Length: 239
Image (cartoon, rainbow, N blue to C red):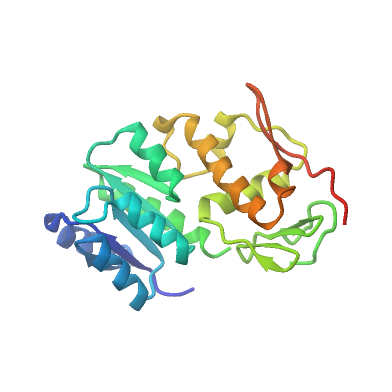
């Protein structure tokens, strides 16, 4: 595995040194930028494992920065907000954040969440219609390799966030099984319970959109059942 480097984009200067010391004790090297524009520039120069991104930034806010990150990178993003509003958290997930933490926070919780996100970034025989023992699922050209953290459609990479990837793995590995929104909340570590079920709907919407970008029919394989949840049902495919 590569070294554990985290980029903090936050204009709260009093937060930097304590975090650098605490996270350093837990194996993390902290890079820091006080603005979104500087953070994006630094991200282009340095190799990092996870980004911690504050919502309230000078110039471009954290939501805009997260959108920019998602255009070029698939590394995990954890957003911070002093307000702790549920709507802020839903917006953060909508623009591509993988996790959300409200200020003030306990450094121990932040470190634990970073470790979860880092582990997701490091996830073989192929199966043509079901689950393989090696953690690869394949249906009609859509293939997910859990060990490598890769999703492809007919050999072409599908760029997913860590949370989107975990959701796709969960649904594909249990094809035909219906998951309620609460079950998905419990299964997908990193989503705060206080975001309630809207976060799941946002996450599914993001995943469907990326699948549809490869082929319109792929998005229809994640079926929503009113008041019941979601199920992976690959159907109606013609090679």
